[in-house]
Structure formats: structure tokens, C-alpha cells
Figure 1: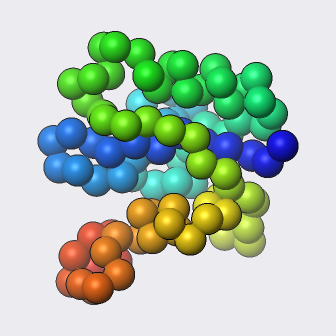
Figure 2: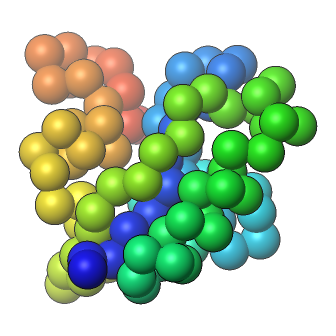
Amino acid sequence: MSLQVVTANRLDDGLVVFLTADGGWSENIHDSRVADGKEAAAVLLKEASAPELDVVIVGPYLIDVEQGDGGLVPTKYREVLRTKGPSVRQDLGYQAV
């Protein structure tokens, strides 16, 4: 089983966020709480799917990550794009900062 983190979209601005160790949400994947194994991943997803979070985030789900030289890196291209922002408009998203 690979390492996994929980991702979702923040409701107020639509940005991609990641569940952190303190139960909050960060725009930076490197702040994510990492689950190693199926049971740990299920616990993370259950926490992120709590009904009271429906006013903060939408659509939480698990993604596979691996430890890279610079920290956590998603293993799927779709998730790499979500962490960086739109690929067709370099003036938008995280890459514009």
C-alpha cells in the first residue's frame, strides 16, 4: 500500500486543500498528514468527511503520494496538476504567486 493523504476543495474560493496533522486544511501538500496503510487512510478519510466540515470543504478523497527530494509528491498526473493550478493559464493558480 502506498502513502496517502486527503485532498478536497475549499468552499469559499475553490482552491485545493490537504488535511493537516492538526485537523485543519492547508493549500500546501507538504503540510499534509500522511497515512501509511489501508486502516490509517480510512481513518483520515472518515475525519475529513465529518458532517461539520461540509461548510468548509467539498469532495474529500484520498490520493497516493510518495516522498520526493522536496517532500510529498502525488503519484498521479491529475493530482500533480491540482497541486500546481491551471496548466493553461500560468497567470492563475498557485504558479502565479
